Image (cartoon, rainbow, N blue to C red; front, side, top):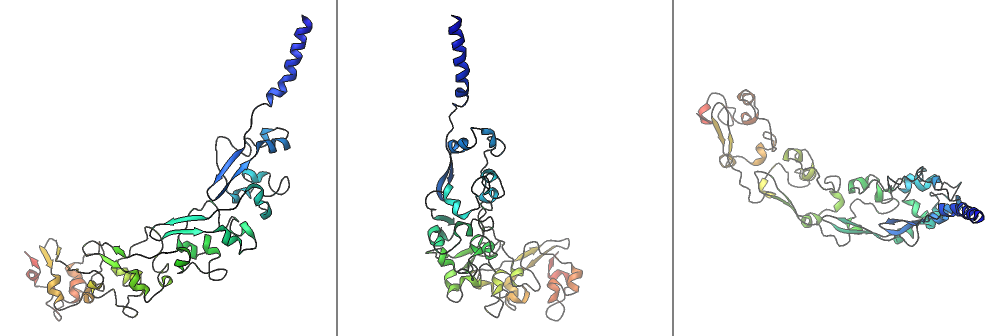
Length: 340
């Protein structure tokens, strides 16, 4: 009886290490949008480190955080890069070692851009033309994996595609829209402005005389939410005023109806302590043109400063014409404007 009990205790002690390492470890798959998933083998790594999980957990991989690191971060010894430095194991920065983790061929990358359709980046086409392989782009500078999408204006400054497509290494991103945005047909753009009819910009009409790069992105930024400029700013060369300056094309300070079709300016009512003042566009347009007042005397923008009678007597606002020479003076004939 005692012999059997002793034998049972020996078997339990002998079986304990087996039970300790019987826990199942699975391969971990890291899915990639534009390529095959990267598979991490626990079995391969545990075999090299004598089944010591603490080598990686949680010193390198925090099981609670579940954070994915970029290749640029790995090259700075984060995540896999803690061991894969070229000393303990092959380096994550070694171009020839990419295929040890990234199996299969890289896929095309599709970018959907509002208003210009879909752009397809071909890995196969680019890899056939460059000698330094994946790291030509995936080097922590050009494609970092954390910057996200960039605008065309940023590409023109050397970001992402613009690092090579600068007119030296490859065709420039400035103006060559059709080379990447295949089948793109730029549409008509409508600008809505308070108090006036919509202004319509025709790409078809302008492309008969100009190319894309003449306007984009120096005058017009390729991005959603780009700033809308006032007529006063256009008069100083911004936006449409870059060409519509009276030299290359008709001036923005002129016939409003050329852009704002069917526009009929209404009366403007100024309220003040001296009684309401009504300004009639119809009456003044019988003798003057839009450009005579806008934007030199009256800026076309919301919240423009209202001038006092003292300012007008010094030639500002209405006083520029109502000076006793061009028109009756703004001083002394109050009831001609103020309905008191």
